[in-house]
Image 1 (cartoon, rainbow over the protein chains, first blue to last red):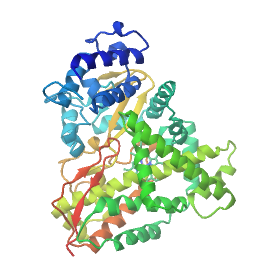
Image 2 (image 1 turned 180 degrees about the vertical axis):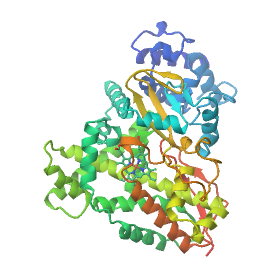
Image 3 (image 1 turned 45 degrees about the vertical axis):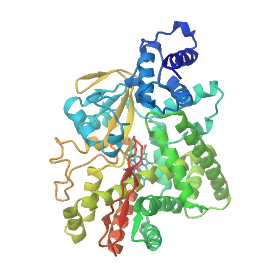
Image 4 (image 1 turned 135 degrees about the horizontal axis):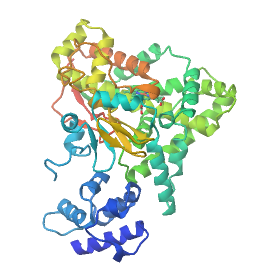
Length: 85
Length: 404
Ligand code: HEM
């Protein structure tokens, strides 16, 4: 998987959690600011694990608090070359 | 990733093994710290006590959060209702006036406190089974004793103590902050099994009462004006089982580890030069089993100069409070001769532990007897592992040498 692909998948998943359209989601906006809370995060983290096999915890979301930095973080956990799954 | 990063990184590998440097950094730099996840983390002794004393801080936010989680997941087609049912009457999560009522109910029902013989019996049974020269004392001893004792107190015969222990371990995860979907699945499974098991037990004991805690809870309930339902009684049984299990196991395992690492203190304890109650009190202070408890602010208020808003969560680090240098001189040193002071290992205020005496009784006998049977007990070279748990911290594996 490429970063851009994961970015799209996450955007869609988050839009789904927040019951809005993917194009309303800004990749650089903070999760908290978007209204994504610890309850929404439960399924988001599970989704990420299923897609990438990377097991994140809720603190990782707080430490990498927007889609763009989260995807970078996920890739850094998979391998340094940038190919996932 | 985050080298000097935020102070609060409890899930980092190194902090499971040793969270005390993180706590110290918090106490010194930001004792009431706003975590990146939104809650406040309180690490100093006096601030922790202040919160526990203040009626405007309520218990039960974990329960509320789990309820919201279960609701949300239900909308996505997943059923975790058993968790809510299992936890319906956990007094830890209740507030006055219900808390007062149920706490009194449990205290009144728990009349048989002559448990020394029971504990000795269990300790001997476990020690008799150990013949190896090297063994994992967590697996074979420290986690099994509280499970056996809890079964005896409640009056339940179980096919496998091991299975009950594992259910308890899964259930206690419900008290941890930062719950994942996998945790929900595991907690839900444990909840279902516990509910099924204790519902059977309660029904059986309604018609066949014996001299045990479940029968006594049933009998006392009959005398109440507002009777508890069977489901509420079952929830109380689950909590009485779970509350004393992982906590006491942690105290015994961690204490053995800390004694073996501090030969001079071990020698002092063995010599009888200090009273065992002082030894236990210092072991509880030095490495407290319960690291984190939580409360929710029910009003806007101030704590150590920080403005806490109504609805916000405070996480109280009991284990950090007990290492606070401003309360305990050389707090990072295990010292049975230190000046005796109150510690917070069993909490403080209206939720103060109901089983402190039982935990101390079990730990005292467990430590005395294991050291009597294995006078040369020592740490092996094998890796020590801590459980990846936050609220109740304890060893997962501690291989020791019997050296008989
Ligand atoms: C070393 C072992 C133990 C430790 C460190 C410990 C610690 C604690 C702490 C810190 C609390 C307060 C939690 C809070 O304020 O949020 C608590 C509550 C409680 N503990 Fe223990 N505990 C231990 C063993 C036991 C045992 C053996 C039992 C007996 C079944 C027990 C039963 C309870 C109950 C029922 C409560 C709830 C009290 C309430 O909410 O009013 N505990 N314990």
